[in-house]
Image (tube, rainbow, N blue to C red; front, side, top):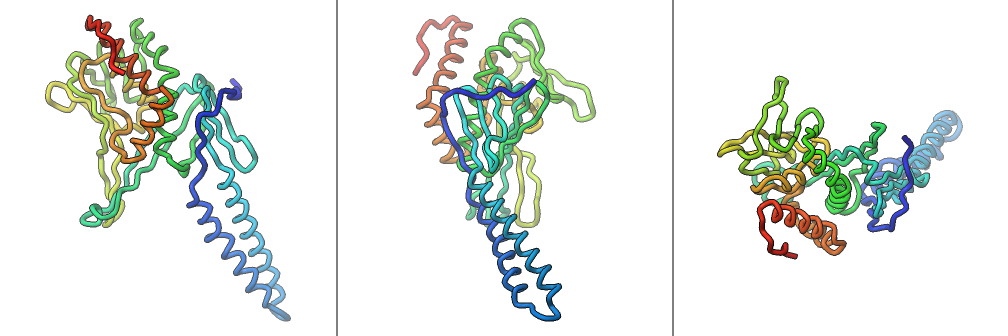
Length: 312
């Protein structure tokens, strides 16, 4: 199945940060220029070394220039009907929201240990990839500006595009699979066991669905890493906890649970600071998230018999 071109109006553009552009200068261009200048001083018996140095210097400079230009041209374009990635040679790929059968989202937080952890803010990284119906996987670069806002925009657009179909399948009695770890039907949610098999929890017994950082691991004596995980509470105890990166379409799963449960259901990206607030404000202006919430509130009101209009 070939990739269709996106044609909707441009809603946002995210360019690459300057970090890798600066790295291209420091790691390739400056050493290459220094090697070229040093090799140019060789004369007489050093002619062979001079040629090798000049060649190596030129190659490093050329690689640095290509890397620098690529980073300056790298951008993600979000359209009303899809997403595009542009680079040094123009458009690298484009995919419509409706074509994205799977959205993979992994959020990682690295922080310093001890007292330094209170003085230096944590670093949060977003790893996003999409898969089409043919199974081809496309990755969004991690070094885009305002990556938290970009991640939320992609999550919102993809989830909105697939929610109605997924909910219809649930209502028709089908079971939806979210990778190998999670399965959901209108009665139960099932989670994969560590040694194989699945364990199930009736939706009526689910007290809360949380999304929070957990599973910390030391990266060294100064730093530690934690992954964003989905945790389900059943009658006062933890039924299961699974890293969001291991659950394809985890945002869609949360949206479905939010529409099916009466308890609190966490969002995929909770408490990520000012970028979180800016992303919410941007989506509210576009009407996407607000309208989605209105639809979910209206759905819950219809099931409970509440005739009052949903709050704006």
